[in-house]
Image (cartoon, rainbow, N blue to C red):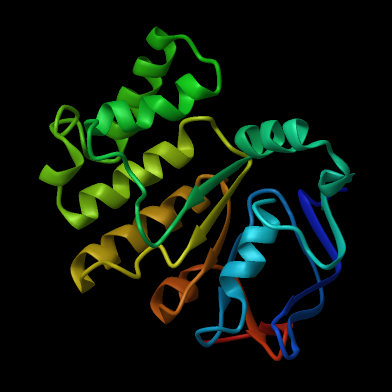
Length: 228
């Protein structure tokens, strides 16, 4: 029987201000299986980004358990957790966070070099991924010379180069025009169709509708949506 890649159990997250406590996530439970495509929708400020940050181990929950292939990742030491994150999870954000002083190829290679790959292997893999994403003629262009859609594709290539088991995408089309957003949506859907596990947090209902599973984050809990 297929085992979950990711299990979230009784997850809570709260923040304290000077005067009161904000309970953002209130007992979230769900499982993600290899190859699944999941969209998480919800109004601004309900905690979609916070949930993705916890799933990506960028932020710790106030309470609850996150298991990757049965391992409680928040029990790992900080160095081990960072190594796990780099080897297992690819991140795509609303803003690309690419380095403007480097070109497209160098930005993608850098993730692999930091992970300890030799330059030849990093170059070969970055070339391959960028070419598959339609950027073979943009390799040497600096980030400021690329369009918004091209920058986002470079960011997607960077997320893919270490061959992660899971992609977490937080509003990946939020800063794009309609045409470019549509192309990015189709690209993410295509990656999922090829077997890559993807969780997308989005306001974009067209993007959400592409994935077989959709949850709405409301009132601090996840509710399964049967249709959009």
